[in-house]
Image (cartoon, rainbow, N blue to C red; front, side, top):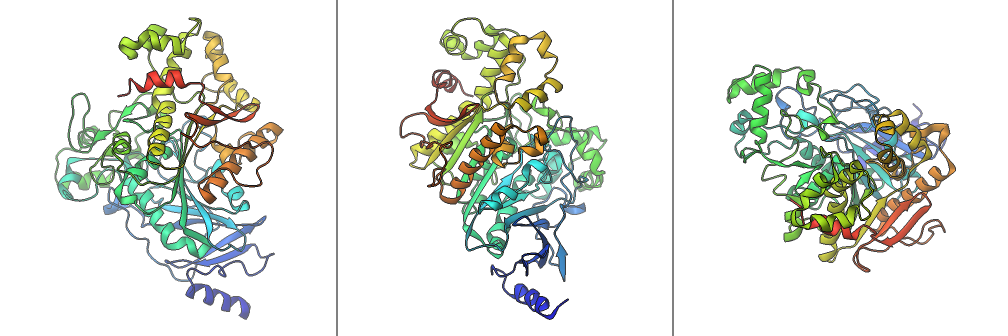
Length: 552
């Protein structure tokens, strides 16, 4: 190594927060940065530096399975950070465009950083939390690549966090072993640990630890709601974005359970964990039972669990729970009482978001509105001509995702915080092609009206590659010019919000109209439609009002 290069490495090791710890030459494909744990070697590509597979906590193996994340061990020398580390243990499912590109492992508490080449001075930071029903998700997925954020002057951090039974698990033996400890929501604790890592280390990359935006979609969006109400996350971020993340008393339509208290019709996480243990012939509530659970092979803990639980919940997986310390209550209750971390918020849902249900008729679907059934009918099927499957799906999508997004906007706005609501209604022609080959394809023949509804509305999660401006990773050479334009527009709004807490900055193109703040003109939002973004008052207000009156 040349003498000047050795001196630079030594200098970087001594200046943890100095922006000088960058690639030595513009044509050098490597880059080095010193952080709290040691020195990292990343890579430089097309004006962007990236550092992957950075440990933010110790591997949660052996006795650390079902324990809060522990500090990562420091290392000597230079750690290679040019490739993704393992994604977390899971079972992939067909059609998942965010499936892992690594071999999943229980050793997965790593994060990744993209930044503009050479860094900068106090750059805004965005921290991404993936979705996947708390059972799937991977930072290695191409749609989550942070290159475009870095090119636009934002440092993008993505984290792996424990999912499935590794991340969300209760059992009487764990409760007995740690009666006053942090229990159950280990995946949330991982997210908090990653945010603490950002607070301590992001200045070394040129980032501003005082300008951090946390954002996530689906389970990642619900995670953001949890971080917004968790006292353990206070002060770790400055802005928040929730994409299709629910926000009321149910997560994706599934009640959020208690850690140890069984309620009528709703067993606790401890009881559900005991049922899982029994299925693997592990009985008891003492140390021997806990040791046996920790000795189970990782594949046995996964036990085929995947995001299909959204349609049919698993009797041996609790998901997130109210533990009293991490998740101290339900987001809607805490928003109403003002007990949350008060930051600017961007929030929204998609035009045909999650809406699984078992109703067979319009009357069945509208029966949930009780005495307001006819009022709901006039809002959801005023002409009496909609396919019952469309009505049923729409009612549930409103209850699960769309109305809770508006509710969160209302609550934050009522506390004087800047709020920007969106609805994603853009449908790519390539998305239509994907549907024709996907799991809904049989409906093209059995329920043609429902099929037309699917083809003209945006499904759950379809906004993500537009936000990241990675749409070509989904459609490749078939990506249309309209797809690319919409990705550029949406990505620009998200970047602006991360920089200032307002998606509207000077320099927006004619294709990017001003996004009205929620509350200033009523239920105002930005609707990302097939013909471009359109600011408007919510055209679904009547049906969301009747839905809001019947929340549970």
